[in-house]
Image (cartoon, rainbow, N blue to C red):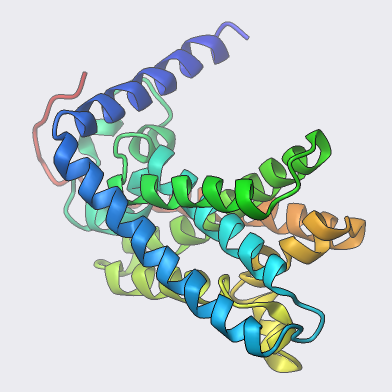
Length: 264
């Protein structure tokens, strides 16, 4: 407990400093976050028009797709706001830019992840909150389910990306692979799982675990399926173990970039 409390304070301080830095350029912040909200709204309008013509698609209704976007955008937004460096980890490794973190008495991976905040992702998170207010279950039970869905989504996004980005320790520049892995899970997590079948659905629940995100509106928010929920939590734990494990294994192989820097 003596070590945990100072670590929590350190993380909280980093988040506050990241936000303070973003707010120094308020117009840029508002435009960046606002454009992401607009981008998401365009997709929502597309799905609204689609379900106006086809009210039910394999058991999915417009309400379910709205919550799918709330969960997907919100979970990704949280991961990129709170742990923004997860999405540029490969470039930091390949560029020898993690020397700075190795010299400080803090958990290396955690320190790297919380050292950056994505401004556009704030727009994703605000968009998710707005969609939840409009379409979600605003009861206490509904709120708890939604927060759990955001947590699961955040963990799956973040550690799946960390797993891919950490390959930079072994193959050099892995930015391309990391970006492709992120693009794949992001794209498939915004489509109802009901439109996939056979091998496609199997891939979405194994190789690219986007299915554990996209099915949350049905398997958790609409009616809690404890088998699915257990699988989603298990996948989150598995990706956490794989992501952190590959990073630590790669860190043993890391060669210093001989860069000098200072971080408070």
